[in-house]
Image 1 (cartoon, rainbow, N blue to C red):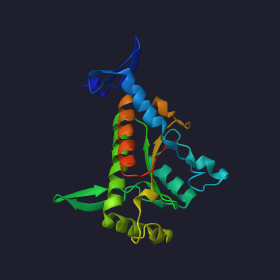
Image 2: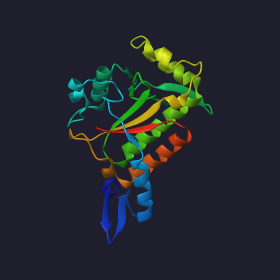
Image 3: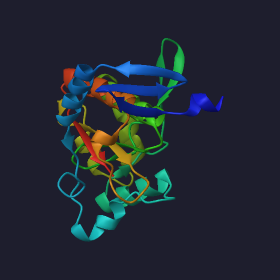
Image 4: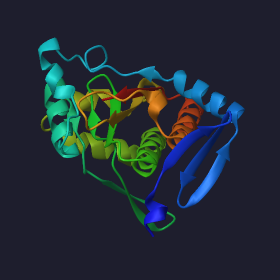
Length: 220
């Protein structure tokens, strides 16, 4: 029903209530403070500071109305001279199931795995955070995943062989980046994310932290 498609949050008498999947939830204030504290610890990503972009390219990093995700990714990859992995899927066998994993949307020369989603509610963002976590897990433990990336990108980006070389490989030298596009042309504030997206983001941050893989957030 239409009611199941609604998502809503409100504050009432110093308590937070959230509507999701046709169910109302009361969220404890202390729990929200803990989640907000975890998210506040995540560093910001900047294409200028972290990606080597030039100031005149700033328009490339705006996620405006009507912009397709693949167009944005292509534009950013070109501006950063980064490898584009959008919709390039690595297939690996796990428990006899052929699973497909997208390494990221954009892979930069300084080792940032950028995953991009336009904000359309909690569900797409939860997928974004899970995708980044799975990618980081594969990067750490699956040599065929790294080989796939090298084979896909070396023709245009010779630097990837050195960056992802097997000898002395250390996954903690790479950074996962969650890019959240507002679709308005002005970046969202991370505090504006829905509570269930914040919970998923905090969980992903904790899991990546346990694996010693840095995480950054790019509000676009």
